[in-house]
Length: 390
Image (cartoon, rainbow, N blue to C red; front, top):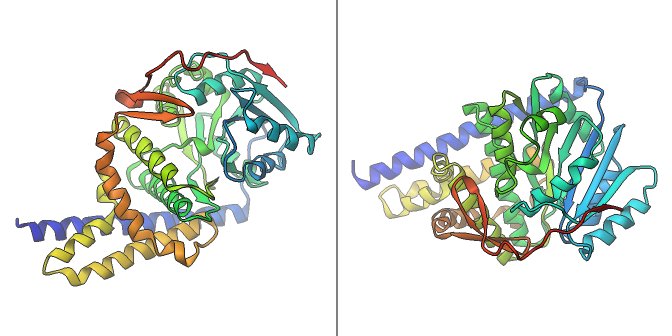
């Protein structure tokens, strides 16, 4: 098989798989919208939300406020910061004062030696949780008023230990933020839904990860993920290994990226790509196959160059329509136009991840070990702080 024919086969397979994924996501979206119109009974249970904070993310105050306005009872929201000087602390206290009727705890400090600073903080917050269902939610998440009622039906089966939401990015103002939101929506929502429907695989992201307290206790809480850079995914693997079921929620969760810099975009992509490559080396090559644009551009060097533009246009249109369905809002035209450049950049980033040996996260530097294990290069850099509720 000569190079031109091989390239055509790869390009056809890539576009075909992406189109199949689009059909699956379209059907999934339409089915869940009809189900929501007819109403779904949610089990009557309380919810505790763990919100580890670190610094001031884009529109953090608006994101935090959305959790105070949730329509569910009983509900408890537990915020935490590791550093008493963290600017997020004053902000969350200010928002809490505006909502005095809400059951809120604010925890300052971390009393664990977990390599992952986020997991260490969640270990500190967990003892304060009083309800059976626990939502693990990052600081850059914005939640809808009725979201709890739309997710809880996933726990109707008592064998379900975790319900996870597809993740979409919203709020872009600068170009790097638009690229990050597009990539997040494509990878953590569009392809995650398709992987579940087509291959039966669960691709779990921490932005909207709901766990049953009993299931968490069965895996010794966060003990198995305290040194892992992909704690969300590994937590789901541990639950499956102990016999609990996972369920994909029918409503996406929104993560906000508004004013990102190019440096932040590149840093985050390489960190996450390095983690994914070590976590699922068998699946990492599929990311190349599910990225049709670079393969279509390579056709420019063959007698089939005329196919490049239609293939790139098809992929762009499919991604735009899927993003519109999942995000519930369109992209600005000048952001939509950069999809081919975004795909080309992530194509080169896929190869660049093989050079990533260390990552920096929340002020610490780690070596990435097998299965995305985090190995602190300076374990004494951040001594544990005594925790207290405020």
